Each structure stands twice: as C-alpha cells, then as structure tokens.
Length: 62
Image (cartoon, rainbow, N blue to C red):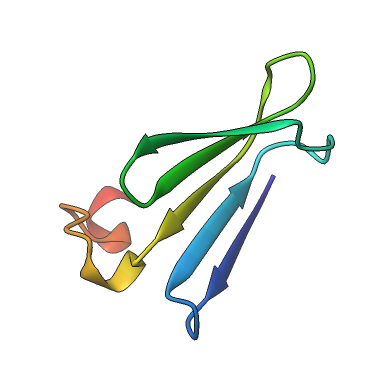
C-alpha cells in the first residue's frame, strides 16, 4: 500500500495493489476508484483534497 500526494494538482492517490488498472468508476464527484480486470480494488484517487471537509485531522484519529 502506498499514499501519494500531489500538492500542485491538489490530489491524492491511495494505491492498494500494484495490479494494472482495467476500469475506473466515479464513487462521487472528485473521487475515483480503480479496479483490475477481476474487479478487485487497485486504488482510490481524491481530487480537490484541500477543499474537502475530511472531518477529523489525522492527529485526532491516530
């Protein structure tokens, strides 16, 4: 697993698997889920990260 953040793009990608992405589905506006050919989740992309209300900060949930 790996988390990549791109401040310039205001995006984050949480990679769950290194499998090739076969399809991408929008979960909600600005949040995409990538799946492999067998339908397993490969990763999740979140756009406009800085504009999202994430509820609690990482310090609060850790």
